[in-house]
Image (cartoon, rainbow, N blue to C red; front, side, top):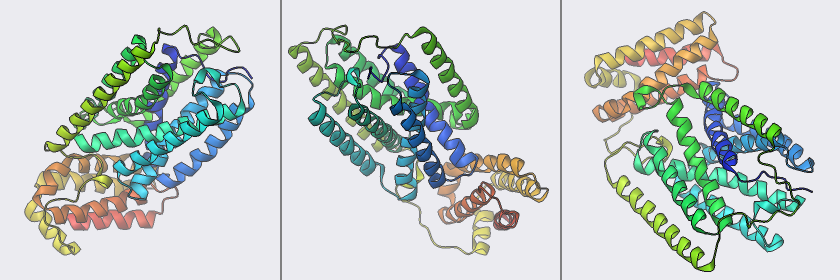
Length: 407
């Protein structure tokens, strides 16, 4: 076969980042906004991945549409696998990051032992292509886990969180131009583009109240899918990323010598140590994590409350303006459910989720027990309204229970 992957040009990295952004925003849109659910979304994209990968493996040379469609789908799939471990199984992000790092090391070790190279300039046999796509899948899962772990440790907002992977990619790029090992720097950059793209997607989709641009997951997905489509069309016509030779030479890259590779490894080690030190420092500072499933237990005293007790706690502790805001949103949602406007109910319930997240830093310290009670009711309401096949009776029951608790 001819080489099955594109030449690594600036177009490669642009479209790779676009794909990783879609992996974050599109998965969130299907899982949460449409209410398909994490497990069902994962099963759906696993099936789609199998189909598009079969098509990609069947072609005998690099075809932009087949290749980049596979990357888009694998970006969503890898993200979902990490989310399942974190959200469904309760695996700490530090553990999942370690698992995926070890798995990637095993994939690379077996790949090299069999093929004696990890270069993407030689993906010209079926076994090599199989190893390549397995490695790509694991890098997406690893990038998701390490990116989420970083946010959990630091509590950084969506805009600020872009800076760390961007700075690390700049360092890796500089080392590659200096003469670092091309294969090593390629795979490090490939992993780092995952948290970079995901953070860009979160920044664009997050509401303005949380220091994002507030475009929403659907709009962000459409923008980036359109950009990917336009780029792929351009590459198909221009063939700017096609490796023309059956046995391309890697000598066109920067000059690399043993001495330069040693210096580059030392710099990478310093960068890794500096990153670890930065994360330890950021974690030591007061911050609110955005990842509830991996967050430490609240420091406030909690006790189980009845609904009547929760109502009294809320009346005594929560600001009236916040309670009124929640009540208005839930009443609007209940009215839409009653009139059969399911699409409108899903849209309005999103406002409740946003308002609740915005108010956590203020409300939870005021009364942790009441906050926990309401948090469980909100989860029930979100699940019932966003269900793949909503049941109006369940929706009304969960929404009415929330209103009752609010008094």
